[in-house]
Image 1 (cartoon, rainbow, N blue to C red):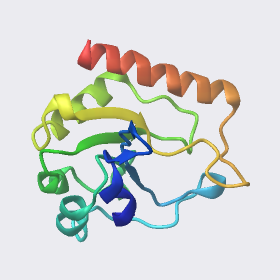
Image 2: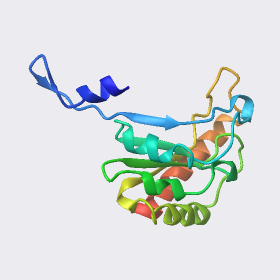
Image 3: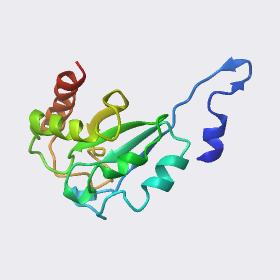
Image 4: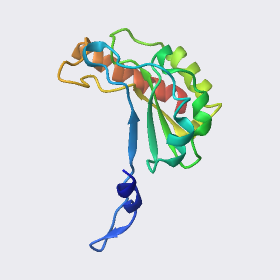
Length: 152
């Protein structure tokens, strides 16, 4: 990862290229289960400040993910994608609750450096999750509607 990050933005064969590196911090949940719990407090200072990734994809879909306090360790040159929408269950989160959580996270990282996404893919293993294709579509539509509400 560090080697790849060091090459980002260099010239290669006469062409200028820019590559953003994203780091998803996930706890994988095959079959709509989760494999670990706890917030980012123990790793945030070291991980967020030393990674060469420009974007951090962080799970925050339920209480087991901890608080937004570790976001205080995100350097100013990084963008944070908040995985607030669960992919493990079909129930939709409310736009109001998502907007409140984004506002809470913006106490640590400015709104212009925050994004929103599902907390993980809908099929993070061969087992997949217990969520129908229609529910997946509704979750993605919720991302768009919430983003329009928050960021315009």
